[in-house]
Image 1 (cartoon, rainbow, N blue to C red):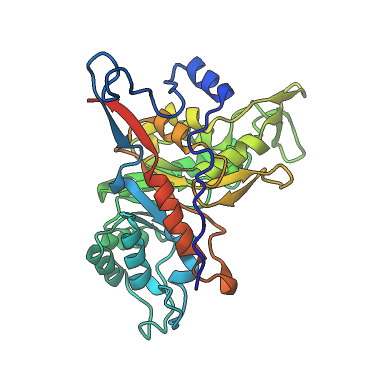
Image 2: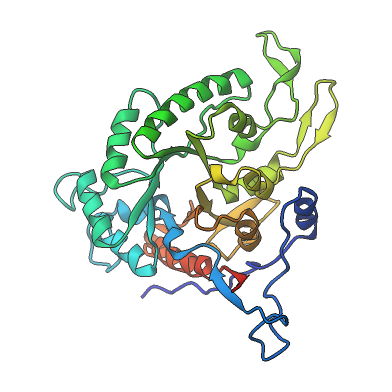
Amino acid sequence: MRQEPSITRRRLLGRSAAAAAAISAAGLPVFATGTPALAHNGGDNNGDGKRLKVEPLVPAKNRGIILFSVRDRIGAAPDDSGIPYGFERVLARLAEIGYKEIEFAGYNQHTSILGRQITPAEIRKILDDNGLVANGTHTQINAATFDQQLDIAETLGMKNIGTGSDPANSVYTSDWDTAADLWNELGRKAAKRGMRLYTHNHDAAYSFLLDSGPLDANGKPTRSSGKRRLEYFFDKTDPRYVFFEMDIYWAHVARYKHQKYTDKWGREQTDLFDPIITVAERTKRFPLFHAKDGNKNTTLPNGYEMTPLGEGDINFQQFFQTIGEQDFHHANWEQDTAPGGTAAPGQSLDFAGLSYTNLSELTIYKQR
């Protein structure tokens, strides 16, 4: 029998005074810690006759999962363990947990399930049968295959189509300029079919460009103005056609790893990346998020190690409450390390359940 993981929900409601000061200085709202006091007359209002109500910070209809987190069970061959395998059984289990949205990370399952590969139309029927909506995908974004990928996304009913890779794997602005031209073109094409084109970040996307200072032997700049790669891409792309999915975990890794650059005069400069302000300043360009948690561990190169949501140190309460627009934003749980292998074959689905519970318990208080 599998052992269910315990729920600790560490630091879901914790706050950082330094982060609060930075947010306030930027003119953004700063929220009080924890639950507001409800007591003056029986605890049912705030003392001036205005009752408070509690609402989920991430609406139920916007709680999703990227299937990369449970890739071991999507790709598993039929067995008698009682653990779901393949699209039909795994998606049914995710719907049972409470998830309403699915972000894809490929469209294949083990061929022994049907004696062939499943089709996008068959996956769509499974989604519909379970009351699930496809809210995005991580696929290859390039001019050669984009129409084919749009066809698949349209069959699955997606409103967003994206990738888990950076638009340019480069530190130079010229390469990001080229990528911006392509993405503006492809974004227009997606929009004509009712979809938004988006890119997902890892930490390198928020590292510094080499865009100033002396040139090297190949005529490339060797120092930085302090501009970060994806921030440059924000400005070079059309906000009507190019969107973003912030991976909140990797954004915190970027804050840890990418703090220093050498300016055009050869001086070392420090600049801390702030995930919350990055989103809040352009909140409608981020329809999707990866709600991925981690414990801070400075003995590791990335400064964090992944955990189920609510088990780590990342402050999702502060993040989602500050960026606002709850109805617009969609949170997809992800944990790259969720699969437990042969030792714990049900671990990824167990973590999916735990993470859904903790995501659903993030709340905001409003006046009625």
